Length: 138
Length: 138
Image (cartoon, rainbow over all chains, first blue to last red; front, side, top):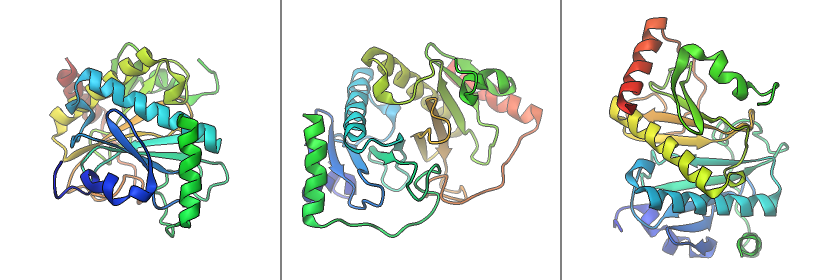
């Protein structure tokens, strides 16, 4: 836990977006839902690169990434999942997991190819989406 | 092997960019070197999503991704590695592994945030870069 790291605080800060706590990671819905189902998976440990993790830890973490991606696939039936580990702005390891659809405005380009207006949901809207993903993970 | 898949053919098509053949993947330098060290790791198997792989296979594949990322880190000393598994255009699993630098023109934004002119190297330039990465992997 690093006091200045926004990702270390995110599970608390975004408590309304919580999906699940796993062994090595926390999973929350992304507040901007311009891409429906956009989810973040971030490590409990303040770590940066994949190669900083021990083999078994990395393997289990990638199982968690894969499990959440499968749940998103089940709920949203996208054409493709996008998995991105960047961290240029916040180096604490976090995976962007984004269901992509052939009728989304940026398809087939990466989600960063064009700026867009943030799309927020109502409290009920977030709850419903979180509940669907939780159910698929159960 | 799918005859129509460009990623299935890439190891042959981009033979001048070959870095290494691993157990589950092929690794080549990206032809566009606007981001120095930009490398592609693509699976031998024509597969799409992380959750389509069996656990042991996925774990070993992610070790390969991690090993190549570590080598790129050693060679280029970037501020951060970016790891992206997209596949919207070519669904055959391929990882974009991109060293990012605080003085690269798009930092700290994702590499897709702005279009850029493709940067090709000379034959000797590609050879040198490939040789450096190979050496770090050895």
